[in-house]
Length: 328
Image 1 (cartoon, rainbow, N blue to C red):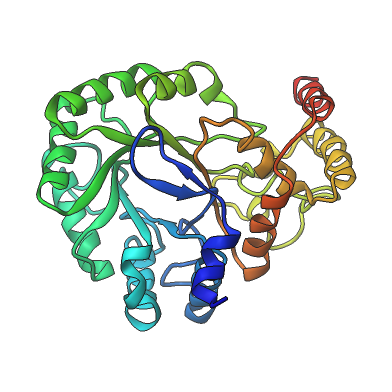
Image 2: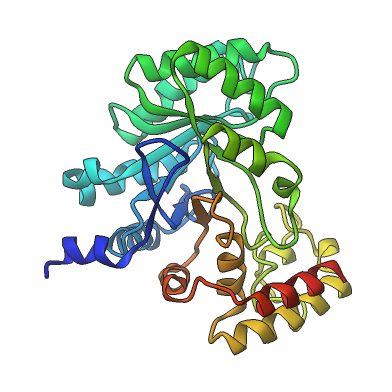
């Protein structure tokens, strides 16, 4: 069998809500390690290996970098040089909502910002369209109707095939779904954060998604790398938590969390998995989670993530033990 066919034989794909869109269980996010400051050859190697493993979904945003926009430029270069023949076999997404350029039109959810952002993202990646374009976060000062009408126009103009939202709470999500449905451009996907240490989606959001037939693609499933074996013996030099900037701060690595990770790691070992693999499987245990976005700094991390596909199921005993650890 040719490599192209093997790619799709080995990956598992799930329907995104009630849409026609199928997404791989594992998606690759380009939030970190694909920017202008990173080594291009490593970024390219990771994207190509991911695609060979059946990861067809590549998640970006306008401001991924640093500098902002450079992750899209890197991905655009990889597409041009290596993957241009495969564009129709890939799901490429982008978002707008966080700070991208100076002045009053460079962030949040105005029609001006979203449509300008989408145009810029397409230019950086050298694309005619993205597959999903997201409102990256709700804007407290812009009418939700304006933000959703901008997504509707982006889809109708052919600049994106589907509309999505990210970081919206259950009530905001329901309002967004209702507006988009009335416009004739239904929302197909919500992108929230979700992990063993960050379970807010269980307090209503997953129910809202199920009720509306909307899929979910979750990010930060490893809680910025904490849900791995990296921190079992303290904070290693060069890790995310060792840096003064970034989302994982050393103050978040408490004795209580380390104790839980050690207990969870024992369950992972019994399953023949690494801690990170257990954390990914746990997020995917809920059928309302369509796909999980992984970040990576090297190819082996992508291979480890895809390695969970043969061992996704949990016994009732395992789930009970994990719950006891998390709630202790």
